[in-house]
Length: 161
Image (cartoon, rainbow, N blue to C red; front, side):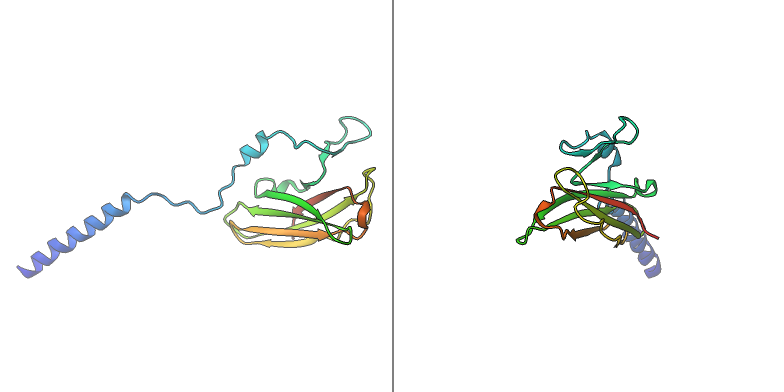
């Protein structure tokens, strides 16, 4: 008799617990990335690098990140990009990246600093590796050395090895 009551009570508790789990909302890991929104967005207004022969190379927006590696186009999202002029006149460019995958990634970034004529104001920076665990945000920053002649920048991003 006691075993039967215990069995009925246990079954009722398990049934209630399972029913409660079924009504719980599904929680998705964050961040969630929507690459369709990025593709639908118009190119940013502002300066661009254009080819000498129209249509031979896609114009590349300056003061932005250029994904140079097709392998990461649906893995990494650029959350923000900006720059600031430092007291000595140099420029610090920086970007925040989101790993949209469920696994760790390594990416590499380098920066071109350009003068008013869009010529290289200094040698391109060395590739810098950024480690991004699954679904995390990471940052990249670099400082120019050419002083006040910097007018724009272009950050290149590729998958690391």
